[in-house]
Length: 277
Image (cartoon, rainbow, N blue to C red; front, side, top):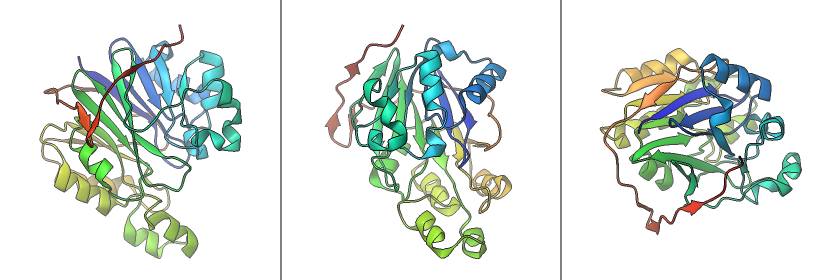
């Protein structure tokens, strides 16, 4: 069984990614409005009724702006860590959100969603790996540095949403105040084009078919710069720049299944959690 994936929006103005099989799907983050989410999915002929869960990477507004309305209107279960829920804008989720923990896979129908910690200036930030019958898709955005979690999981992915936030020269020479520049590049902010490229060159698996360059800065990067860097060394991997203004096409991810029963020495005991009808 293959996976269908799409970026509904990617950037500081809102982040939302769709990953699903033929029967069910999940959204990673809900940073655009409910209306925009619905409209973009409709244009892609993706049904909101297939979305059985929303997983939140962290509490920053560009990842949760549309969450309240989506959950209320469509009765979609939302998965948030207890530490992330301490954010005042997520107080409402206390009674409805399901806790998740790092390295503990959650079964959403035929999808297995596993969270792994990352470095970012948030309460309890996580990346996610979504799997279906050995096909793995990673969502690796808002990552301050290339860490062991990122490397090991990237190596297992048939497709990935990988942050390529800024061009180092543009950031250095741009108009941001120094404190913001240092926040972005200081290890708990965002990955640069060069850092993302290093990960791709050194750890891309031979079976990776698609790479979405994600969360590009509006002021310190351009789609052309990022795409050219990766396209020149892409090999058999299709490079897609995830837009901050519109949805991407839907891509179908298949390939040879990968055994992924152990993550960082932690046994995967899948938790079956009930879905809302």
